[in-house]
Length: 411
Image (tube, one colour):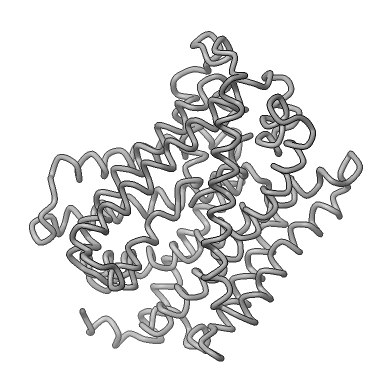
């Protein structure tokens, strides 16, 4: 959740919201925080490593809707892998001569996914253990940028005179919403947490709240210390540019290296997580049995499929399109999770007003994103719609023809 997302979408947010970039991140964070409430209530009432998958199944039973959303979740994680790989290529290109030839960009994207794939195939334990170190490095670096850059902020650049129209700011927030995905995985650890009734909600709220603070402050520093013109030229590596006023060229280089490590580790962890998700769905009969194949506790087929599809997607569409597809995918999933919490509100002892706010905010956020990006990025919206169609058709035909008897089973 922390690090990889901000490196990938910061430049996109700046290009859309300009001086109001921090507002866009705050709006997206507010939607994430409302959804975190639904996850907190659901994970305490239904502690299960399946997380989102189990919540939706419990609320809607095993049917076309729940099966389609589960597959949509798996596809959305593919998009996040593509997002991180594209960001890796953008920062990696800094170390090569300009302009960056297309073949080099595609090579960097491909390497960014292939190497983590190999790591996952060799040692899944290394992936999980190394993430603690990587997260520490990411957070330390981002806090250092904030601490050193805040003294160079020109508040005039953040004034309302440099803001885009309100709807453009909201749209920017929804496009970069994918930067907040990841908090939902805390629910998957519900069975392993001590005193989950107290610690699970605390972990979710602290995680989302801290990331909102981090992203808002990073955007304040970036927009406040670097001119709009310079940010537009360096859009794909905006955070590295933001480190220059306080740290000079050394800071620029350090941030670029940190971005490579951050996005690389994010790919590493997401391949691991998505392969495990595919394994879980396959064991439950929701995906082909081949994805449930393990060797030394590593879901090998899942790792291969996740990685190769991620490479194909990342090399086919632009960073902006990937961000739109990823944000739309998670907004749709979070909308359904909020609906799931509403359907079980009595069982999970949830506040109706907060749940209603979560449902409304995620629905409006998704509609705003789709409506206001259709003209400029029809390809992204078409891919998103294609994902939905694929999910529904797969569940319809695979669910009815291959495992029709599975619908008779319930938790």
